[in-house]
Image 1 (tube, rainbow, N blue to C red):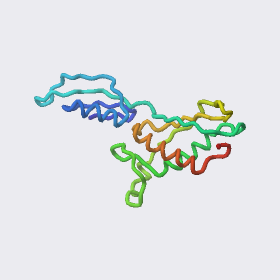
Image 2: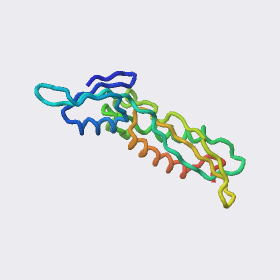
Image 3: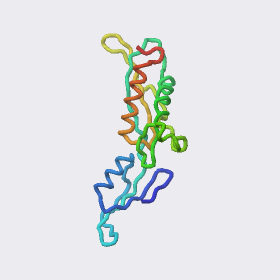
Image 4: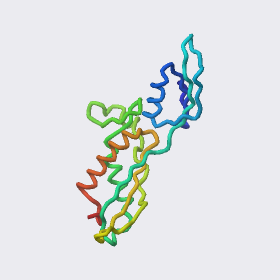
Length: 165
């Protein structure tokens, strides 16, 4: 395995199924592959991979008619939630505890990049709703982003920003 800090990798494996699972787990997409690669008499697959685009999750919230854009407020809530987590050496999402605090600051990266309002609408009952998109780091897997998204939504529900119903 050769990793490039810019987000690329060359992977060589005799287990092609394992190679594709690893690619999905780390949010990589395949750019090129060769199935006929010989490694010490074993048939192997070589793949050139690149880091996938950032995961995002969408949420809609009922709001007051004059609430404005709540992206910044939602980003602060999301950042507070994400501060409790980090990605370990295998890029798996880990929760910070007293046992693993050592080295936590050095491994910490911004897991949530931004929050954007992408939709505003009024439903058939006259309730106003805004759709917001939460963008996660391109280093986090889709399952990690889903996990954080659920915790973020619970935090928003527990303490909604002003203007949210």
